[in-house]
Image (tube, rainbow, N blue to C red; front, top):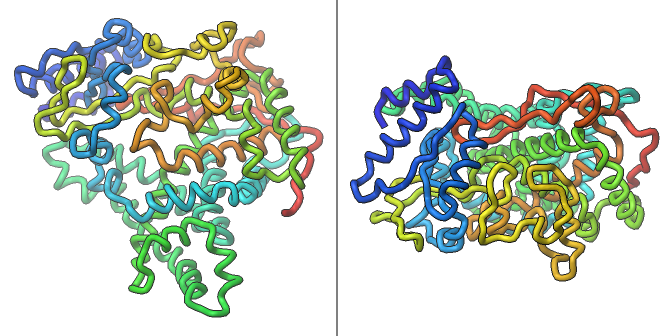
Length: 530
């Protein structure tokens, strides 16, 4: 891609119609840079910068063959039927890490770099201790809602992003660093600032000329701010890490150790040789990095769910009834490990909301690292250096692949797939033989929101439990609606769920500028101490 292409794409004044033409033009030029034998893929046409319409049309035109999507950067979209053969390819042929590293500028963000300490701790200890941590997640959700939403005796407008970014930082912090640090205002601010600065670095580096990037990027204010976040994070964490290490090495430190052994700090230390000098900066970097993914994604997931419920408040009573019925059987209304599997409607809500509003328009994104490319069963060869991905097969804006069963094949009377229906998957799970399928965290050819295969998101089990705890406590305390008089979609005032914003890099985000309304319930059954 030439510098003039990049300059044109980065122009903020470029009209949508012109941008669509430029994106298609750039994709073709990018394709022409590959060898002559690899130019046999069709290119989707972007109309009016409408990515959903583009994908709908392209998947209809090319249901069983790869095509070029002129996103930023261009991506080859593969048909669903080759997913199994692709997801099993090793990292030296098809790489997630290198895709993330290149796309999100890992040289400056560390995204796509190896994080053995953090990933191992999340994949093993964090996941294995979710049941133990549920009461603390619930307690922190209650605490965070008290201070972020508070009393709302009348319908009260709430701007969601700032409130729920802080709420996500609190609930994550309780599990990642534990009390009292998780409620330390400086640590909360640092966690949020790092999350925001990481996004700003990606934007800033995208805005540099590729040829000049190695010289310009190190001096960008956003990168300097991110480095300062890391330095300050290590300063804040150091005394807490030292306290855990001292308790481990002290014969009388059992009580202190017991109170600090079930958080990510302790689990990361388990992955290190603590008999040698501990690298506090490394631990801080791993903590902040883990927090970035979790805080950002939890916030977005919760906001999308709240927009869905505010637009469809008629479904809230059914969800609330299930929650109260399950918690009524638990001592003190405390969420336990055996509680969550009983909340099928809640799990279905999460999966349906994610189906309607995925974090990205594509998933299973990889970079072809095989020198000779990868040969597909379709007969196509995808060249070295190409970025590939798959469409979300049940997304509301595409035609589902013919090789998969859709929810309507299980329950024909359900609303169509372009309609939000929170009980879609709980109804399927009521069918004999489907009781344990179609869950929020389960991946498969029909659900790739957390990717699929060996590189599926290791933190999805924690994320699912955390979001459920937050939504449970919201629904136990508040009603939500689009308007100040409990309006949802379809009311005479014509309110609609705020549309998500799809960017040229295919990231799909809720509209953070749009508020919703909260009103507290007249009575809440309190959660009593463990």
